[in-house]
Amino acid sequence: MAPQPRRSPARTLRHHLVQAAGVTIIGALVAMALLPGSVDIADMTGGDRPAARSQVQTPADAHLAVLMDRYRCSAEGFGHSAIPESAILRRPGGQVRLVTFDRGWQVFQDHGPTSLVAVCLRPPAQRTP
Image (cartoon, rainbow, N blue to C red):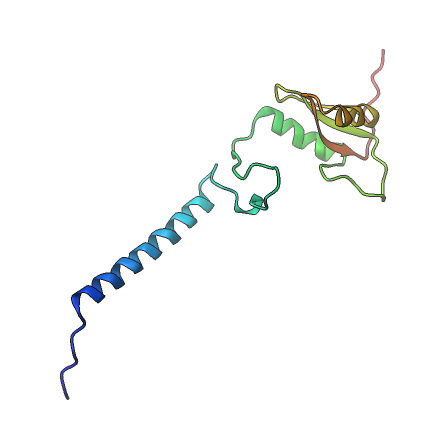
């Protein structure tokens, strides 16, 4: 059996460097996907939403989740299949509030500091005087 020719040291070093760079890049992508508060790749669609989101839930976010579930709300709307009866607004300080759909539509058209978050199928509860 004839001895095999040896690889040149430069080629072996280059091979190891390329391999190490590939492992580093893959490791960084996995870490970004798993760490809270990292870049959310699903949101990188070129829209006007920020690509990075915090994973920390504030009291306003928890309240928003309860309202969304209780009043059957959607941030995208319901199309022509249903008529919303209420809406959720977010004030500049971050507080969320359920209002009538008419009030939510007014805020949506005003483009002021308060923003429309979602429209809902159930009406807001009636307050007794």
